[in-house]
Length: 494
Image (cartoon, rainbow, N blue to C red; front, side, top):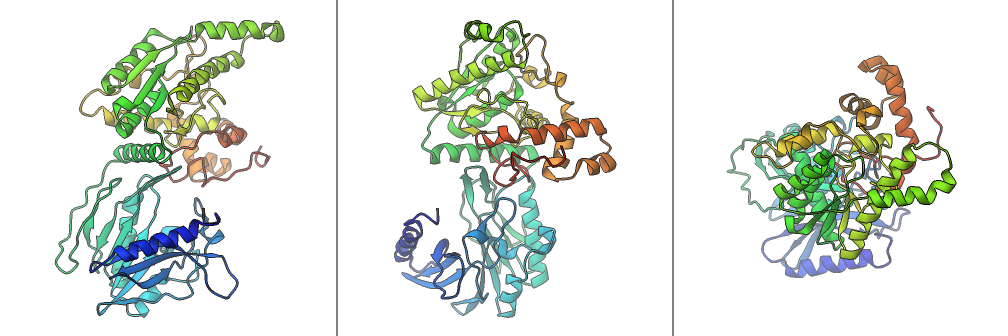
């Protein structure tokens, strides 16, 4: 956006408006500034402004510009040349932006030659303030809090950390803002995934007890916030989803109902000749438990018509995965038609394990505008579903306990094609998230070589599918998306 001709100028106009509205209570706000330096460099600055009594008291520029994983800041911004405290009402404030406070211990390797916090302390800073847009993944809030506590203790400076709340495309920002004193004790821990306001008296606040939500709750809250913001910021009020009676579509529906309201989520169950009656029953039971609408439209007749139409071309060739994919694509047509007619956001329901190895149908079950659980491994899907049912049955227990199946051929089970999910997810975590080689996985983690090689090959071969997939909500440390940039055309390791 910064390269759109009027974006930065409109941002500066907004800053002027905010400035005119601020009186005795000051505001520290992030914005994008022009780089007015005469020296060669990038055209913009990642900046913050301290506003008070209708004036800009100070401008601060970000020093450390990450260019790894999902971050690309060095492509756009010029770093600050100096880190100096801002003098305000007789105090010296050390104002930092996001990455400026992340230390080598938590980045896992030295990335920068400068330490903004050390420079600010040398300059006499009495307090460190940090404006952040730090994206969520499981465990991130606890990691940040530990890092902030250690930083405060090592510098002897209290630290106020304010993080963005909301979803943007694939990313979720969880808030979880925190205040720590000079001894590293937490004086305030705000709730995750919710906007809020707190007033903290640094001199008299007491240490608070930290409540850590379980991983399953974090996943669910992140998915709800990510879906809600994606839909509303894109102008959607309603969503539709294909309900198969399986665990993936059930969890996606539960997230959608929590995010958008039951009256705004529409389900469609589309049994084939291979679907069990239990799948339809489970879909209807789920819809009833969630309070959402679900209609039934079979695909048997369109499937037979499509096979008959292609029969002269297929001749005597036996049925194979082609006919399975036909059924998935008929369902995709049904769902896209529903989306078009009513302006629903179509949600895809594939999980990370399936997307990793290509166990999904392009232009079939991959049709949609947002892939809600595409970064949630299958075993985590089960865990979140059980967490949802901790007090009462929301997702039918039969859906959770029955063997997963695409039901596209007689007596089909996922495990006919895939390794056991607990094995598959273990290998995927090592290969995709930790980026270990197959040799390292085999030698150091006890997985059978043939299984590891199969998983590696499937992940690499199916990059082309993921390039065409709907954007997904990132909840792990390495999602298939903007932070993982693999080419489709590559033969390394094959």
